[in-house]
Length: 322
Image 1 (cartoon, one colour):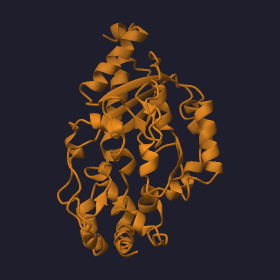
Image 2: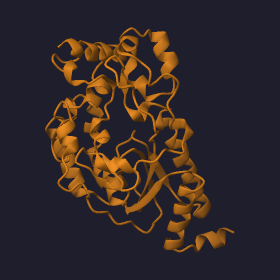
Image 3: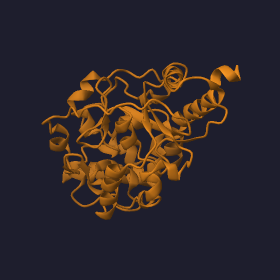
Image 4: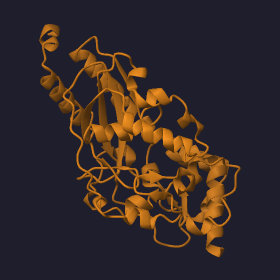
């Protein structure tokens, strides 16, 4: 059996991994790219950091060489496998002034607890095909530019809001990356289909998208409601622009025409947890530490901490009287 596996051609190996990834592992998309230094994307990243558009996210300053060249992470790297999982569910926030909004990606279970397990399974599968296979995998937690690799692997194109857009699932996708010592047939980047559309830029209430494909994180509601230190107050005057978002923000994705092709996910873990769409701003700003922990165990919302969550609720509610 091992001898049969060892003589798989590169194309057969690629197809075997594609079939396994889209089948038993349940990913919606998979793409392959050659492991190499990504000069153009790296230059944009370094400029973004130099301009301070990452704000207080100091970890994004570290390991620059690893971000630009995955071979600094895994010296034997030959390929990068990129997977995507749809997280869209056909639910909506209540359209009323008192209801709090949480970003769609955080309605269910934390994707950091879902995707890595699947990537570990993929690594083990690669070892059954080639016992010498070496891998490193990341889901938004390591020094890897997932979006850049998704574009290179042909998963989608970089939208003007700086999210990856696919033609048939829109931008409601989680990305995972597996760096491999094996060589696969590299995909081809697809065209940018944003055209002349500027809906995401026009809709952003804080002007965080300063130009097409350029995001100033320090102005973004997602950064402000998630990454800002919990003890720091919402900046004066911003409450009126929060539009009831208390964790993250989906405005730029909600208005994107490509998201009209959205399809419900088949991943049960991403279904909204009980009560997440029914919270009011009063609920948020008055929530105890105990209730916060009970409601959001295993949820991305835990990242904001109870103090930060309450702070966000107060800021959004204060915006109604501004």
